[in-house]
Length: 315
Image (cartoon, rainbow, N blue to C red):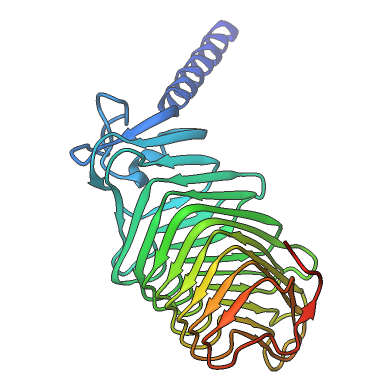
């Protein structure tokens, strides 16, 4: 009887080890998608998957999904550290009536999206909805035609958002909107060569946002080019350097608004701020605009920087 029980235990252990090995084998460090793939495949180079959603479950944590050839690879929800790379081909997400990318990972996960076109087809919910991560990197992407924001960050903890060489345009909502519900933590956003055009606000930095932007375009938006808006108690800082802020339907830069609980700050240097319907720079309740006096503010509904704090001559 004891020998029989011992044999059963060994058999159970063997079955467990085989099952574990099968699961581990299914999680590849690099997987592939193709326009002619199939999600029943293992997502290998020679047997690629059809969608990002199909590939992500077969990709190991900190692994990478690459687009093998042109295709529409579908909306995806990301819950772990991963890179999705469409560089070198036409890698698209057509997100009609849905959100293109939802990121709801852990507070230690790093996500990178590179070389993707995310199209809302005029009725998509939003391009990206970022709920939680440590860092999100967006590189060489185009996000357009959504009914709400191009990128929404609505975090409850610290997070870094880095956007580089990307275009976020023609969305009914804000191009980029960032906010955290925490009173002490922050969303640190870096924008480098990012074009935010044809949205509501180009950049809407809300409570808890710390934004640095350089070599960017905030133009042809229906409301403000840049809006620093501490609607909650956590303050906002937006630092804008060497950028074009033009032809927006309201103001080039607005800091603060009536009813703010926190302090909204904007620092501007070496920018071209012109042809905005409202003010070049508007300071509302709770707002502060600091300038290095080296911006070109011309041809707006109201020129100059009335009430701005001069913090230096600049260079």
